[in-house]
Image (cartoon, rainbow over all chains, first blue to last red; front, side):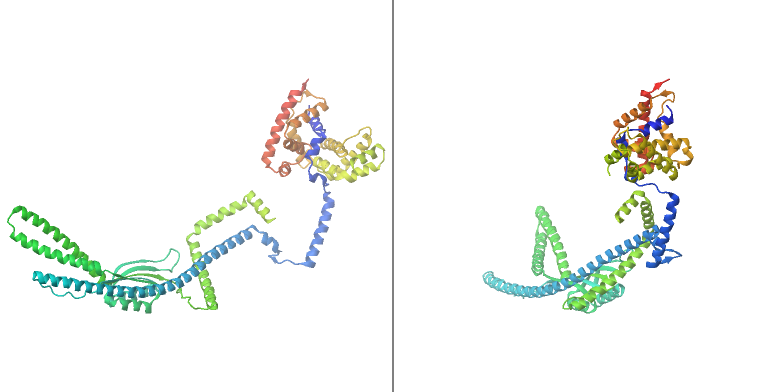
Length: 397
Length: 183
């Protein structure tokens, strides 16, 4: 069997196989290339003249602008620009919403603060009333005690002088959230104010913002102000700084203070008695027992003395925690502003945030330029991949 | 006009039969011839010969499909012309490649067959194959399509087409060597 015989045999295979393998393009006649080229040139001439008559496309460097659009690098550049705009848009939107949320929270905080202020007033009044009630009760009790004592005195023949009403021991605490456009100047002014009012900084921390932004400096500090100057300090802060949030609290520690004080006095009396008993004691076992008692008493006196010092410090010096943020634009109170003003401010803030977003994004690109170049190369290679291109074509269709 | 009516015209020896065939199947027949010869002028001659042979052979022949009957005639004619005219130079490289590939199936040139027997063996061989593979074989060795065209048509990769055809040629070679009569 030779090649020719085999070819002939294949030519004569069953009709059903030939029929089954037929495809649509078999029904199109092959073109006579010579004739076709004439037809093609005619068609080209017609198309050209039609283009001239109807629409003249712009050109670049003598070439059709449509080819320019079809350049892969042009498509890639368009994709990168689109991605960039999308990223910046998302970023600024997030910040805008965040800003609106912050404005809302400012307003909420303000109203909350007014509520809190009201509550504080109420609290103050309550405390005063309670204190008055306490005082009254104390007076009543002291009168009762005094009467009891007088009765005791009358029976035992001992006299104790009348104890006057005790001073209320109040501890002032406050939290302030401040915003400033110049952190360093504001902080220097705060330091001056604290020192003028004889206060001091208990703790202080500071951060210089994120790594790609040159703004957003912030700090946190705890200052102690003499209670006598507390109101003056708060007034000065309210006048000189933009207070976003203020939270004040007053706690009355009179009860535990005087209880501790009484216990301390009792222990001191006990200590004196133990000393006198120890001086009189002759039995060794009694001496040892008394010394043990004395050391326990001294230990308790020491503890209570420290506690008293702590209470005194709390009462004498109010504690103010201050958080300061440096911002490019102060948060404003929404309050009774009309829609127009609010909308205009929102637009302004949005534009500012967008500009900041763009600037920060460009700086971020600077930080991550190597990664971006690698990613761009990888994306370019992937785009060159046949299947992806087919997919893109399919999507385009 | 359907095939039965055309066949009726042939049986009546009506010359309109050829015109009807030409009108209906000229494009297909031209494509079959062109796949083998790759030359427009040769195709026209080849197809014209096909019409003449069909006119002369019907009747007594009574094919079930006029199209495939004439297509086979045209194909045989084209193969003859291709071999005779050294198709390697004129077939654009497609025909020689196919012929060389198919020649791998010849196990032993000394083995003799009756030509009808070879066709039967190939028909049986195609019958055993999956329809998809059989289509691939016919596209390559009857329609003489390029590997690329087959891959597009079958919606698979070119390497898949090459692998499948190689495996089928090996199987056909085995079939032919089993059935061969050696001198």
